[in-house]
Image (cartoon, rainbow, N blue to C red):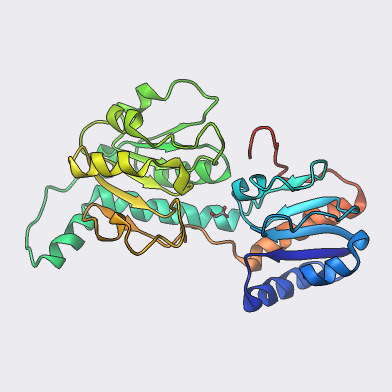
Length: 300
Ligand code: GLV
């Protein structure tokens, strides 16, 4: 089986994925984009990491597009993405575990004021704040997919009272009023774009915090800045941004109430994800049902 491997991968990353995928599926032949273009009809599947728009056009034999990213919003924004071809997102327990670790670090740091102490250190300030226990800090996890569920379970096991919300799961407003920390793990869809905006922030109790591990476009930056500046929100931990890398002049870099991560909350690990992708390619080969299929009309 000939498989196109392409996307936002430099030569070393392509080679790493190639090695991991070859080990997971020794029978396949892996092509880069120029190789695939030389014999487009032979390409049976594509394994992609945010490929440039248009990359998957003109491949008449394509039976599966397997994303190496969990979020497929950028793929779905490509108008030229072949319509009838099944699209699968990456679902890897190792990735969910990494996400749960990041969420735990952020929530624990907010509970225990560790970001405040980091800022105080920069100011040379020795000042202790009253200590809160995990049981005092109510967490609301937006999104209850693979990642949202893994994060909720990890935080609950650590003693935090956790509630989860999914877009089709009833009213959000009453949950917001009882949340000290909101962790966002929603997929980015037309319905969730801009959801982290003034109305949501205002429904939170004063002193609440935001942890955004979803997508930058979930946030209305100006609204977030306003509630951070006013002190209504005490802190925001942000892993994802409208423009990545985050532009040098962006206010988040120097904001005392913002912690910036370089979109690294949960990286796809070739050592485990290659096996996940390979399992779907084998299913395609054998005509069995494919896993982790994206419903395009739903957006995830
Ligand atoms: C990362 O953001 C991913 O979608 O895998």
